Length: 471
Image (cartoon, rainbow, N blue to C red; front, side):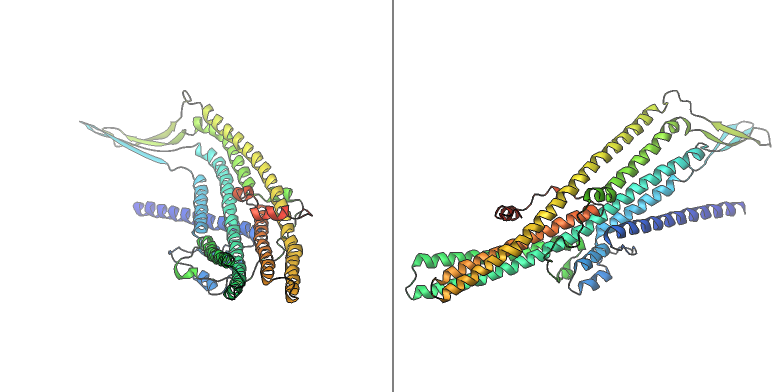
């Protein structure tokens, strides 16, 4: 009966511990879900067992042309990085539960055999200082968990914006391919006309060869654009966790003409600081270190203290002697000061990193705001000034051709200028959208250092240099 009672009590304790871990994990995951939703508008959804296959709901979304929002949903459902981050949160939750538990009591037993009989001794002791330190350790663990939540939320914000950037690149690559096909059609028409004039004896061999070279060059440009369009899909495939037949998705929609529409550029520094998940992580880490400073020195001296009960049955006696057992650590060699010094140095480091990162966040906010303004203005200038002028040039050139004042190849040359302006517009608009997404990620709490450090593309600089109004 006694054995069954002990076993039952053990199993009840084990079950209680497991339930506590599960409840803590679910609560922390719900907190993370709310945090990510506030920053991105994305629902994490329920976590399911990963069987290595593409999520059924993701496959349903893939059956229709993808939008930016549906692509993000697929990534949340199917991206294994997202699942790994959620699993890591479960680790942090369990570690916090562990930090709040008392250490197990230690049962000791020994026997000494004499000619006249056996001396038996039992003891059970528990570290009584755990009672004082467990609350402090739990407070350290809570701060570390908050740091983990902020870091995982930042990673998930990054995944969401990586998907959106990849989607922009796919759209832009598709549009650039359409532009190259327009150029190819113009080059084919020009080459065909040149061939007819050559056969009639009105064009020399070098001119015909030059036209054929131009056609071959544009055919190569189309092939390169097709390869670029296919390659632009692969980063998105990786982010969506797709392979096999599922990579044959299509997309709908084109890049909107105004990349800054609806985006507030006011007080971006203050908003970025307030939203920064990395700064929240560093603050939580500093809080954990500050709390650790308060206990680490005392732990070195007092933590080994034990209290318990000992029982002994001497040789030749049928009676058991029972009494208290005490054990203390003598702070002779380890006084705890080195551990305290380490904790204080880590606290100083955490505070310094927080201040340094805040400076970088502010700088990134200013750089990205100016990048959004500049690229948006350049795209607008090409759309509203350069493209209409190029189109008017084609119309006027065609009118002169109809009046037989110029040759047909001048019409083709004007058309090439119009197409080049269209190509520049798509590339600039793409970069403007990427800049917007970089700023939105910053204002959602993330900071992509690589994206912030990226230089404006060559076509954007050349467009800016050619604009007398400074757009």
